[in-house]
Length: 362
Image (cartoon, rainbow, N blue to C red; front, side, top):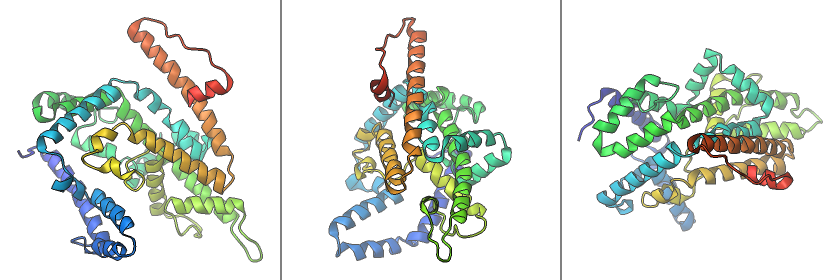
């Protein structure tokens, strides 16, 4: 009934403690600030009140302990085992790691540009850059894995022994431990970690360039800010930087922007962008493999709308097309090579060209 691993208990304690402190600062010690805000909306717009109330419950975790929203203990255990089995077989034993390698081509590189992305990758050899990324919180989930001993990838190879041990000793969560073991041994978690590092490293270059562009094209007496100024200003504000008029951005501003960029581009959990059903405890098992596809589609829609429609930046769709074609070709080749290696048989595909080839790649 009680966890006796001190490392796991202390790590989880401080993680929950940090969340609780932040929640009390924003919503009040007992949630009184949030309740007042929700009550002010209730009479004005009952439908919006209902949505905000559910969002608040999902954010604070109240929805996970509300008996009215929960399954029975038996049903919950069965659904958790089904999700763990699907996660282990479809992600751990499936092809998910292969397209994950090309994720940077249709996210970080599309938004920040290929040259900045290449420079961001090269910068990762600098230990100071990696330290700054860790401080920004961009790799928070991976750090939690390392501290809890659930990461068995390239970041902490020695913990693989503990992972294997849990599969045999932790009988109540055996399927979950098997899923974790498979997704790390096959490199899925390791690729996720690298993608987050690349996104955070690239975003520092991107943000500094945006700040330089905003300063060079800022409005002056008798002169309005041009299109490049508006583009840079809006992107800085989107990444949480409000005081971009300063001569130099603070480290806190840059690190906050690194976190925001990495989280959004690598499709990390964000309850404000997911449909309410995705976070409903009773419906969650039905959407376990729908989240990523939905987030990727929404991310591309929002990026194209912002960059093309609002700022006429035609480089973004061109980068997406190039990344989709290159990444799609690489994914198909890797899948075919893996199938041939496992089965010993050649894979025959229709030789598509032009628009049909682009559609297949995307």
